[in-house]
Length: 147
Image (tube, rainbow, N blue to C red; front, top):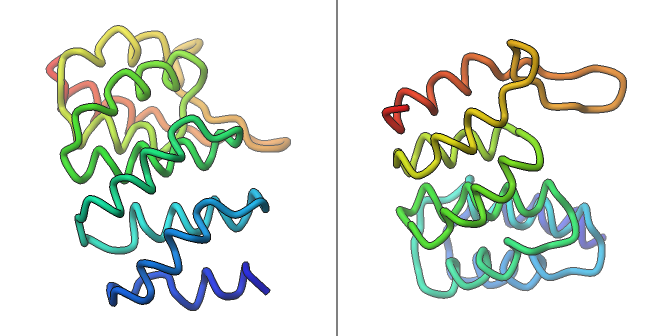
């Protein structure tokens, strides 16, 4: 049921919807947390201390996807305090949210971590049996960061 509520609230920037997503971003269910964090971080442009606090609360989440969504949401809001978290995550693996965050922050501080994310000539995010080639997004992030 909470999963359905996340979808109903996502994309709405009313205070009630934001408050609901903030609460659900701390849910015990990983999928609910992931989608609520995505809803806060990527589906609205509203930038408040409460939203940033909710996203900051997820940068150390046990779920990799939740951490990536939180980092991207903070980066797109210009929160440079997320740079160390982004570096940590890039050194552990690559994902579209992390590359989007790097592009949004556009700082040379990310160059070493972006270089480490390259694997065998391609940048691939592992997902089940198939990977996603993120080489184009990786190159865009490197250009943005002046690497």
